[in-house]
Image (tube, rainbow, N blue to C red):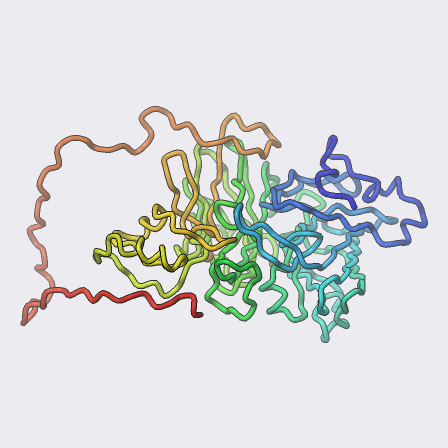
Length: 469
Ligand SMILES: [Cu+2]
């Protein structure tokens, strides 16, 4: 079996399995050998060795599927199968995916390419693949029962169509969809324009990833597939912070980031330090008259957005979903708010008896990041990640865009933490603090209360057992 690592050994050389010239006629009549990936790392862009040239993408914590050219047709082989995916160091999930990982590999083709995709089903149940956003013959659209027979376990189906429209697309099962998508089956598809396109600018860096979510109880490894909204692991490409790789770019690069949402809720994706334009959706490139600058763009369920900006500010810029619950990892729900309640020492005593007992910190949730509570096996802390100045206290859908003037073109490696110029970091004020000046018009516009409010009371309530659900 050809692993992805082998493929990148040498100057981007592809093995015989994917190089048309080296394959005999007999072999060409057979299935292309499936290429598997064993690691969750971000792989370097796969430069095309056959077919029309294009500027390849980089899939965050993912990879692009090599193809073979068979008499002018680009042939890919996807294998639907159970996989073990590391969500972040310290946590592995038992998912379903394609070719060894969840999500499956990114498929990159060029507008006008004839594409043949072999899909082998190694799952315990039937499946199919829908090519989200594509113009194609109806019988290739992949809805089991409607457009085709479901692919039974052990069987291989062939999809074939011309990639007619350039843009940002995805693929996912359309058979027992709820189960199969909750288990991690999905992948990215990019159709590059074949010529200079009036609405698709060339870029220096082109990233893509899918938004997905899992509900995995602390201490277990298999997602609960019936969950509709109450997910506890909010992922980019089946990874959570601090397991999501950073997006490393050179200062003044034109950067494109493509995002697709296959969760069951919307995600306002937010970039620090720069403004961007939404230049495309799964419907294609957006007309220029519809573009305006944003720092957050909402990606609704089943939608894709591609954003573009000039990375002209050096530094380590946070890049994350703006729903604060989506930048947290698995947490016990139904944790009562304990701000203002002094339970010093109590939680520590209880955790000695009940290892996964959690209470919200009395000064906020930051206490929890410090508490180093004993965690069940195969779980990552709710708020975590060490930055150059201390705990980042994040999880889930969070990463960093690293902009450096000395990042080499084509180099996607992590340059380390930003070294801030002198005098450009927020600092502690050590002088005297004056008494606050009272605002003269305080309460002047509000209606006076007839009876004074009673003094606030605090009811201390024991957290209900979050493990019961
Ligand atoms: Cu979100």
